[in-house]
Length: 556
Image (cartoon, rainbow, N blue to C red):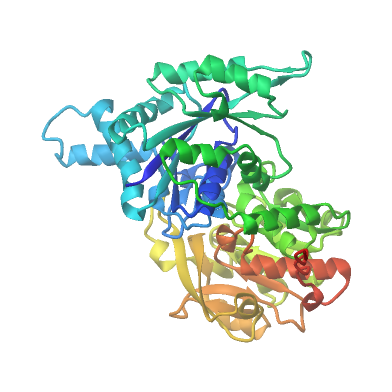
């Protein structure tokens, strides 16, 4: 039977509940426990798939094809587990299911109410993860802030679940803001006190409080919070801003956070094995301390919000750390990029990456970026849309197909080198209807892709409706574009590249390999792209770029 941990937030949103939860997950896993994680989001959207990246950040795609909250990316990277559609649900999904059941007569004419029907449905989601995974510990983060009207049903469901499960098997961690008032030169505990008071009005008492602040929360302030919030003094922890999110597990472990959680849940405090994680963070800090940096330009259209490309950015950082180099990531607005300014904007780039996306805005700027990468022999990685614009540019400038484009952006293009997938033609619904999740790709031998993956069949996650038009495949290949990855039935072009005698490293993938990147195991295409970018920066062959030697253990 699983132990359950619920993580709530107080005072303001965007406190880092997800990182706190993921860090605890990592610490418990390091002690040998099977950990699974879940995000409950109180908004009415059925899933994040149709939400604007400007509001929500990136849509993270799970292995089984669920469009999820970006926090699931943090969870996967921290606990190194592939999550599923059961790991994220919304108020919209709960109501959609209940209304469908009501229309089908499942409630036998009874009145469907928030209590018990909505709360029962939420509790079933808590149990589902336990049932499907057999985890020792299930950590559930509640999105939003305590007191939000949207989250009240979830808070009530947690209260009920906790009473049903038993206090020894179910605990609550409250992450709350402790602001620093510069004018007074002091931290203020009152917002957290009020937040906990709000939580208690719903019948929930936190077992632990994690204080978030941009200043270290001293012992006196933590003691005050413990006293006023009726929490043991050694159950109040501080989580002030750190250089990296990957430093949070060590910071919390140094305070005994995971030990106290184990003690409270009656779990054996097994020996912790965080060696690999700490080796990564040590290498990360060494890499980031280098003054010399390899510059990678990410050309997109949601550049005002870095979270829109969160997994891409993390995958680039993972790869930089592997090679012991500082990677400087610059977000470039594709809409503002053209032939008149491309030299100025991308002139210092050691690598150019075009990420996934939808819609016409910024497309010509992205094609301009591809042209720059191809003609100036700058390492290039295309992801999803990044493959499609690479094909468009090659068709126009190498094949001589004037006006070649994607049918998504130009229905009247004379050369639709990218067109809608046949199984997407009749789709009218927007949500959860794309080609989603992990699909197999046959990697062709003696290609850059084969070198990166080292195996003939790989699975990467997808999120797209359009594909390379096979009517143009022969012409593209004849002009020098190499297809290096295909679906097992040879129908779908999964990866393309340029030969090494034409370009040092130019690869594009229809899939999103960034979703499977891990801190100590970078995604293969990102790893090799960053290797090539480092080689470009340092003026050497890419095979000369190698991970630094591991430090030798001291001898007695």
